Image 1 (cartoon, helix red, strand yellow):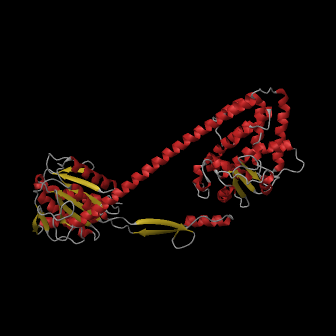
Image 2: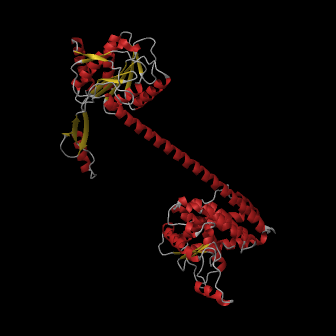
Length: 599
């Protein structure tokens, strides 16, 4: 068979002679093909550029034209340093549609690229030359074994080319089966070498080649097939330049066939049987490749969909951050005015009724909370001990004696007798406390204790750490800042009343999150929500989403309720206070726990 024709000797008739021979008839100009050979020059040049990466050689020329001198779809001429490529492999694409220089363009013509990869494998690994006077039959057998050997060697350095080599098998092997140059048992042996040899180097799968394996075992016999398998397996391990070993394997191939052939009957329709078996193999590989391609496309689409969803989520989060920043800027205004959900000043509904001086009890509570926060934020100094063979440090006599003993024994001293302790102060974490108080009509009992708690917490945080911040927002349908994020301790208590309607907890949490950076680690973070949570479904869903984002970021969220009919917001820690006056103590305790848990 003609598999070995992919490695060719130099052509005997130059191209110029062939062109001149066309004028031997009536002198008419030769008929131009549908695509002029000149149009394929660029394609051949770009294939040559890609051949450098595929073969590792820079001394090769690629010619691409309709038809080839050798008659094969492609061929490698070692003596000329040329790879010949039939432009018909690109059908139905035209030259202007083919751009091999662009990596990835080969996905549009996998069959042609598979043949090109096969020839690149020959160019990289078929570098041995036949010695003068070698038996032509032995050389032909060696070239037959070379087909799977070079693909296996190529697969070691470029495993991602396996898909294209599988495609090239369908393009190269089937024509050789349909038009064999070998007959009888040698034909079956050649088919085994071409198909099963590719199986053994990992190009084809064992399940895909079962039809050819079963037929070859039936025709050749189990013993002869096993002998041939050992020969091509040994040839796969042959070095690229080792002509002697390759010819030795080829000689064993010929001897095995000569010994077994006389005793083996040859089926009359052997060629048809082999063609049918190889057709089954190629159909199986095509189905496998199609399934793999579909799975890869599905995975690519799933990844693209996931990336799109992630991009949309990032865009949505960025939009939420921008909206939260705008809300915080409008709520924490210098004038203390009430704003609507869109950030514009509300014409009515400001719950603030005035300010008052703090009572002695509130001042005492703020001082106690400040001391508790400082105690909770205190971190012990960390100690780091290191050893070294030389000072500074405290001398450890046991290690010093061990080092002397090692030196006296002639070994490299490894003991390190000096110990140094480095103590470092741990930074004190600041505190971030946001209070969102519901000022709808059902929350009137919470106004006085929450106003007191807001002042106590803000005063204690400012006295504890200069980086600590607190803020309080009263919300119904509108938002009002009772205290703003500032490092200054408030002098007076802001009083307010609860006579609003509806709720806007989602925007209140956004404003507190952005103004106090409740989602950012590195501080003791606490959000206190004072509400009975009697919301509509949409208001509840928005609040739950914000609470989940904060708890995921590590911020503690506490819900204080004052009535037995209150509802629990999922994700929050619920604390029911039958006595509203205990709200300042509950908030102070939660703030202390938040800063104590900070790492």
